[in-house]
Length: 427
Image (cartoon, rainbow, N blue to C red):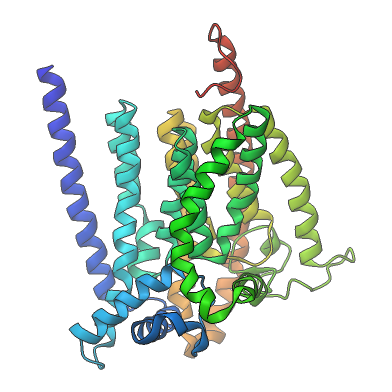
């Protein structure tokens, strides 16, 4: 008992020290680098408009292409800019805009740590937490870039943990908040539909519907003021417009479309076989979706859900058109979760490999995009780098498929080996 107490105290000390160091590291980076200038200028404009008149922000220029959730955060930042700074302190404004993502950046490893500790995995919890706290993919995104993917990643993490722990309110609240955060929140909807069908087959569909209805109420409170001013068709146009705004085969995302030469090319461009990038992507996603649905129904154990969600987001990123370079952020986070849940070192290897690919890709896009005056010099290098990283990402996607399939079979064998167990029992 004394040994356990000393071990827990040491773990807590290491965790606190790591959090302080990670926060200091992020603040120094946020201070030393201005960020992705075009994105931060846009966020600042939204923040200032939101601080003045949040409910009518969609009637002002530049018009937001985000759903309302993050605009609440930006409105608070806009008020802070008005009260704490001078108009000329642009760099300080950018730091304030980065702060919410930095805090969410630190929250994700803490959530993962608490989950693993609850499963009596203190050492694995600390290990995974440290890997995330100091992972370049995370601090490049929040501290250097100033993007919002930490919010998205935290909600996906909570969604997965809600499924594993059978916390339906957490799971469904995460879904609604994802949809209110960014148009890319729709990526989670096929998983939700399959989960509902699985629960219907187990005669548990009503509990999921009930949790979805209850958790929807506070989300409606957030969006109703905007619907009152803009009308319900506005919300539909927002999601459709968000999908059409970036009509490229790939936008610096090292995926299959980039390998096929679609980086920054219109997704309507016709390939040699007579099909467009969009058509090729749609066909591949349909085939992948059928495979995924089959696996989802074959392995209904709650313990299998993080591996399945990892597979889904990996397939979406690698096979789809209109992907941005940053959208593989959530894959890195899900690999850390799988490492904790399955305790398989192969997930650590894939986590490291994908982290290197994503870090190089994200930083190169960030660094060179702020240097438009030398665009002709660095653009050929960035194009070749994207193709190279796409080849590596092809290997990472293949490894993800193989590793997930092996893990699913292992979970099924473990469940079958337990006397009296049912295939739907959580692992």
